[in-house]
Length: 123
Image (cartoon, rainbow, N blue to C red; front, side):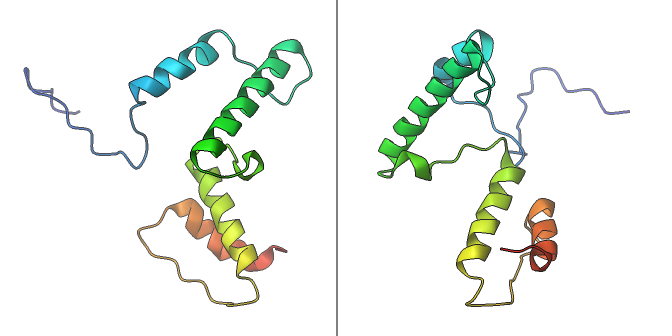
């Protein structure tokens, strides 16, 4: 179905909006948590408690780099969740200032879906 990749040709990845390779420094710092010390930080069993401690430490480190408080740092599971959280914050902040929101067509479908339903939600 697809043509074969020519030999001795280097691949060029052009979909970095969807995913990007992990930086080697980040991978090195995260590898033990991805392989051995993983756990659900919302649970009460020991591996989850340890994961929560590590996550809170990471939150403090990120806050320190960004010159803010740790409670201002929110970790999300991906792009859709992040975009929706940002749009919700924007809508809550500006709900009395303007009733019309403009959305550029190059945006993601999750953002468009959020804006089309924003009037139905209580902010």
